[in-house]
Length: 253
Ligand SMILES: NC(=O)C1=CN([C@@H]2O[C@H](COP(=O)(O)OP(=O)(O)OC[C@H]3O[C@@H](n4cnc5c(N)ncnc54)[C@H](OP(=O)(O)O)[C@@H]3O)[C@@H](O)[C@H]2O)C=CC1
Ligand SMILES: C[C@H](O)[C@@H]1OC(=O)[C@H](O)[C@@H]1O
Image (tube, rainbow, N blue to C red):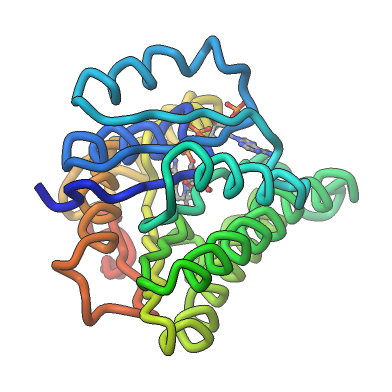
């Protein structure tokens, strides 16, 4: 087990990539704390699955774009699970929209959830880890979109580049405390976030045709890389970013 008796916390853990990572962390021996915007009833099956692995599970409903959520989440984790070892900033939104008429509210919301939310959460997690004095690991879910553009993602891709940069600067700031900070850069993973976008079958086919491994990703494809970066197997890895995209990024021709 890669995370035996560690405390693993994740934002946006009610669905998609976050849910897959939370369940894998429990299988790897960690107690798991989840925050998400959805009510607790809808997360109950995930909490039950974590407990079925013999691990403790905690859920806090909250909006990551409100900085108080970070304080509430870290306080609940320390009170109920006794500390924090691995923190994953994952919650995010991607409301696809053209550039020229993008409403300011959509830009403000996307930056608020994806970038400010990640900052508040990572800062709160780091403070907790520093106060514990036993190091830790922070992983942020950025994107291949930190490196390449999308015509309907002009408000989204800068947030993913920002998260990538946040992990680099946090790695520098927190190395002296033994806290490692890394990002994963998923390619296109089938989840609720892109269900509508991928209903355009011509677009879906074009995206698949660019991927050397010949398929879009599944949420579970991110679980292993996230657990690895949180584990002692990655004890000399910090400030790194790991593309998890089936080879999409490197495929120019
Ligand atoms: N799927 C993909 O192709 C890729 C995804 N990513 C990133 O992965 C991360 C996870 O996305 P994915 O699993 O695909 O998406 P999902 O929509 O499946 O999961 C995201 C979860 O975050 C929750 N959430 C949304 N807004 C907030 C908020 N303000 N506060 C707390 N929780 C919130 C969602 O709730 P609700 O359902 O109510 O919105 C949902 O439960 C995101 O950061 C995304 O940008 C990166 C690259 C590719
Ligand atoms: C939601 C999109 O399908 C997905 O989000 C990303 O970050 C990827 O680049 C994909 O565009």
